[in-house]
Length: 358
Image (cartoon, rainbow, N blue to C red):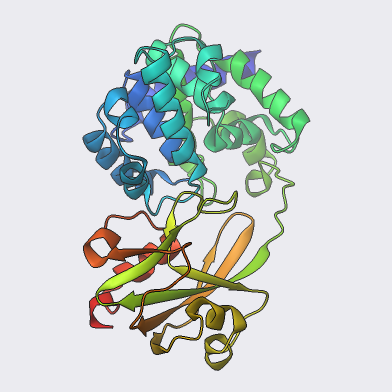
């Protein structure tokens, strides 16, 4: 009990006297803006998320503007953030709040938790930051600080570990100032008790930190999670016909759902440049009509959570329209408004890539 009291008291003292961490959503009490920030920060580093948050709030300052915007516009603004199911859930929840709840954001933990794409952590964050309700927020920073300070070796990704840390964090919570306490603890993990190279000599908790006293800082928290990486090979055909290009909207339950892409030929293994241009799937796309390959990009790779995408872009020119109705012909200007996965968007933003010059 003494150690827990020392922890909470020292943390809040550090927050009042030394915490200078600035973020655009810090101190925000609007449940809508807190929600947007928390969804963006799921699986996204703070520095990367800041720009997206600012642009999102500027484009969609409230529930109504988000709920009534076109999905293409919302996805385009999300482009490059990845984990696009977050965006899909964001749109669905915005429409639900606007149409079914008369635009009023839910105020109880249970109602917030019921929204699509929201788990215990996000619901706790919104409840505490927006409504100052006594719910402890448990993110990666909090897991790390608690594990190190209390010397807890229960893996954080197990059911047992999640229950233990949930109970501990709730016991430590300052019930009178939950928003302030939660923010202080997350900031402390980001600024002082960092994943690597933590600032132990500057840490006000050091004299009672079990991990430091037992020389286990680098070993905690324990995470037993292992992710098997699936290898996939994407060959994208950027097919141009008279300043128009062919695209397809991904609708399957797979990565990048609801985003656009050029004509995709997925192969079981990596093919060399000659093999890919005579691939049966490619020849079938063009259905015997002549096509001219103008350029083949170098190999590009992107690692996702459970899979690695290795691919290339093949610039092709044709004279007659494609007969395959799966693909839509769009102008160059329209192409620039479509939301693409980061894999494609990064390629198109390369200053050395010019679609108009094909």
